[in-house]
Image (tube, rainbow, N blue to C red; front, side, top):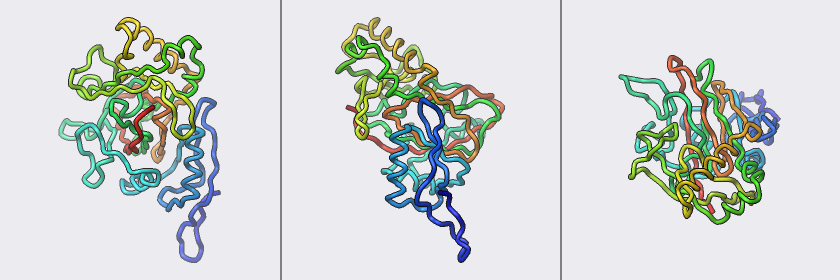
Length: 291
């Protein structure tokens, strides 16, 4: 049900429900009929959560969000997490990160400025990774810079049984090198790069479903395996989870906001021209330690 204007005072009527439109067979749904500038009560919050847990990624289009409104939306679900890059992007909100190739005085105003980015899950190199990420589009190039989302539930569920047995109970080391491997997997990672070992297969705390929790950008090795065996198995898992049937590709428009579940999805970015401006605002929500 769409919000409508109140003829008596011009205020928007607070929505009590919304329409859900599936974006792909793999994952993703668009939420229709909600203006995020309006308050969200407990009933509407639960509807958001139900749609999110079912579809893994939810999209709202044509939103007009300043920093305060985006952070308030995140706070509906849980306290936002501080950025982990060591850089501040907002004087008011330590949880706000800019993703941009725009440069001022020769320096990017945001993080992850240019080109393609390999599949990953946000903050998996931390002890408590982000459970949710919210990305809001402000300026978008005419072509490219799309975000690919992969369903990690399906990636695990479709693994051969012998691979599932090899992965049972194992952990993998995830490391993120902000300096030399921020967007593409590098051959080496600095010894002091932030890192943490998490289960290769994690169980979602709400749905109870199991998801493959490794990724091409940050997962370096499977613990307890010889280096060659670990590398071969990881490359198999990366190729498996990035198959087209598991993926939804989002073509951004200004005013889009996406919220995705890092516990059961991966995401990547397609290349785009360096001569076009790209600006998005990200807020993440801290999650639990994976099990």
